[in-house]
Length: 496
Image (cartoon, rainbow, N blue to C red; front, side, top):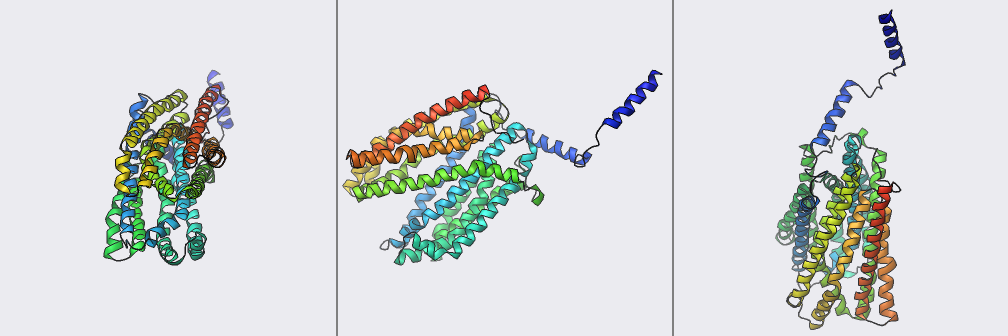
């Protein structure tokens, strides 16, 4: 009797059990398990436990090396273009005229990279292999759509664009030549930065570094060949950039083909996911806006400075070239923070996220103090070697003395924005950028220059004021954000 009742109970349970969903076949379950093992099997050692400082340095150093190579390329490329004809400034000037359009492409592609890296990092933390499986195709799809619009729009209206940018005469001729040849490189940048975003989100900074270095070295080698040997001049400079970027992109694609990454590329249209695309845009678009705003802000500063003294503007540009060196370790640590905080917040390790913030502040501030001190100390020798105009040298030295150490406040802003992006809340990051540049920096400069009549010092101290006040606000916002995360009033944006 007992056996019969048991059999009846089993039969009843079988009737109440819902049928297996069509997609959950034994084959698909096996594939899911294999993908999950692939995700967990390639975690960065020390990502979720162990000391934070070595992890930060390990992830930041390759990015810093890659950025240093790119900075060297910018200098070398400028030298090659200026040597086309020393008596004709229109060649070098033409590339500068086209730069605002190129910077727009850089801003959009950087936004795509940030959006992708944040999403990938959080998905890895959550062990969400479904999202990771669709990331590459979805990112490539949105970048391809943007590329098509950019390509068609630029080639259809290239002459009008050059006119709108203010080019005339030889500047317009060379600017148009450069634009027509550099546009494919901008398109490659859209797609390439999606893949770079995947690498950053996974924490594969070494591969990012090599991708950057390949593009840089390739460009340096090809520049003299195309510019001088083939006599293509500015067209050659643009073409060298495009070919070098092709090499960099091919290197990154081979990483996916060889399955060096957790995120695969299946090259299947069915893997294009609108929710994934939406997340990339949601996090990435504010980053693109902040970069565009930064560009517009410096256009305002340039207008104000040139009205004070043209030589001061030359010094401002000189200082800006070397200020980038101060920020290389800061931006590298910011990239590392996106990876560490994204993955650990996705895994629910909030204490580890907060520790990463504190350790990165210590390392970043220390590096800026050392580099700023060296910059101030050697600025007289540095600027005298670059300019024979005493007024330019004097302006540049004084500007360095005023601005260099104020970059400590900018460290707070960079890291705060990285953390907000990492947890999937990009609007506070955008607010901090707008606060430093538009709401504080520009008004402070205008007041100091036109109300207090401080001249060029008004510009410098206005920038210091914007950096300082925004830095304080950044620190306050992040401190409160971590408290709200612990209390449950702020939630890490889930990819599930």
